Image 1 (spheres, rainbow, N blue to C red):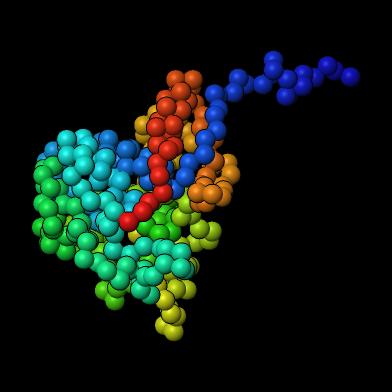
Image 2 (image 1 turned 45 degrees about the vertical axis):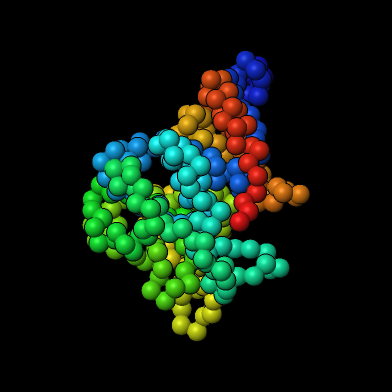
Length: 273
């Protein structure tokens, strides 16, 4: 019988990439996405010569903070109420569309024209002026990670900010980026879910699949370090609810860089307002 090498032996196996494991909470994921998008080439280019509209949402609040840090405006932005609707535990009150009853502190969306903040403006104020080359960032509530698609919950009868944004995206080729954390991943097909939730006779929120560039923590790790990140496990308690374990692989240099990056965001505290 021929002497066949064991395919699992060191001599026969391909040298594996460097692999390390990290746990990342939803809050840390938001910060990570913010850091990556602030340095994204498309965002940096738009900051120089175009208009960027960052539609209010909790993840986008971190994006704004990180972009403002690059513009030397760190600390000049009230992230804590930068949203229109949120999901809270049943013990905390929202309206049936997810809105906080008191919206008096809502600061508006963030509109940047050639890097200059047009304070107090919303997407609705600038919608008709947006053109090809401009950029809209809009968060999401559901993520099909396999297909890199996202969808937005809608409570407004005119489809809210995503409905408004798509007038410019589809009508004038304004680019849409969808920053969304992997804790929002759902099974199944977003189109099928939308059909179910949007049909006559259904009650509650509707679902709007968004035709934009989905950007998650996985994309952030790749952009900032060159390493690959794979979700290997999920869940936790005592503040780690919604967390994911990431297996990060790449060269030693890439994984070391990812280690520094993920440690830098690892202590991010849970979102409060």
